[in-house]
Length: 199
Image (cartoon, rainbow, N blue to C red; front, side, top):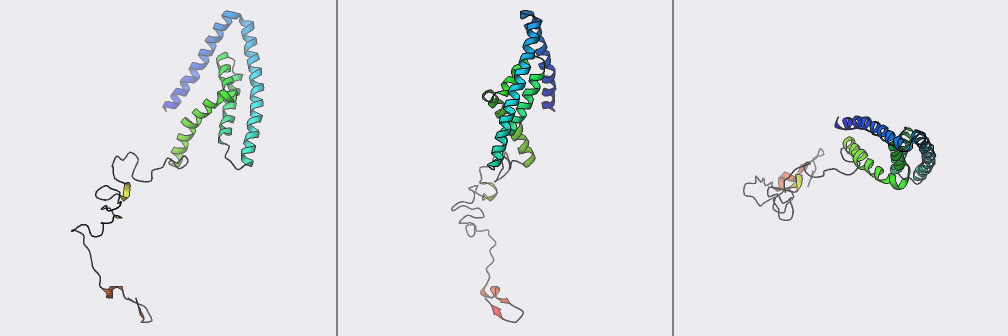
């Protein structure tokens, strides 16, 4: 819900700021120059988006041919779609943001932010951390015990050498309170159906 609130706020603030900036620029250079500048940036941006889109599509095909997941290329494709939308929106601020998303050098920080703050949290949430490797192999998340996880012994040394855990060296006979049952040799005799006793 907070993300939707921020998105809704951005959808309100960005057009308002764009309109105010257009009025400011028109007051400085005139409306004719401002309109011509908006149309020119939209046309140039569309050409750049088409060129980068073809290049990104070729990179996707090359990655698939090499057997690699085209993660960065798909993110770039989404950012180019957003860049086209910004460039077609009449406004100089949105055009500037669109140009930042078009060129690879300035698009890289946006790609990193999308992967780090949007894609990876979604993958972790849907797969329980297996997609990015953020899984817990011992204990529980946020467990502050100093023991070695579920295999830690009573002394908290993780059942290491000489420890008192279930796999420690002294786990069988170090305690006097162990209820140990000694079996004689007859307990290991197994009688089969044919009457043959085998040991």
